[in-house]
Image (cartoon, rainbow, N blue to C red; front, side, top):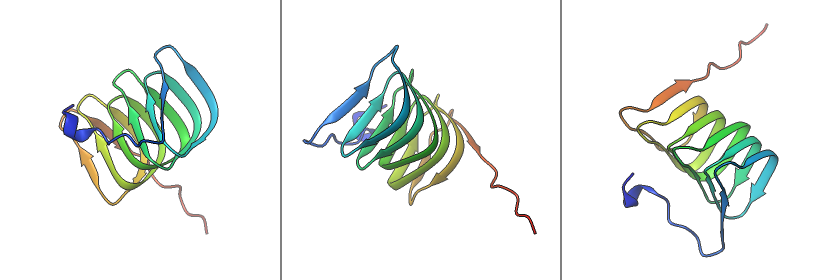
Length: 118
């Protein structure tokens, strides 16, 4: 990934979930998050999310400013600015964002909305 594709890091802080780390639960933060390990649960970050090539995120709901995905993500992703899915990344779920970029070589599987009854 070229340097221009990673979101700029805010001065307020940056959290890294390192390789070999498994975190389960609800994460809420005012700054950016980089996942190099595994996160399962729910994620709300007002800034950026970066899922590195070895990172995995499985969440019912993911709300961020912007997301750069190079690893594996499963869930409902809402990004206020954009979502960038790199070559080699695997995304399975739904996306709500004003700008979606999917590189050639990425796997993107859009989840079907639930069936309406009635």
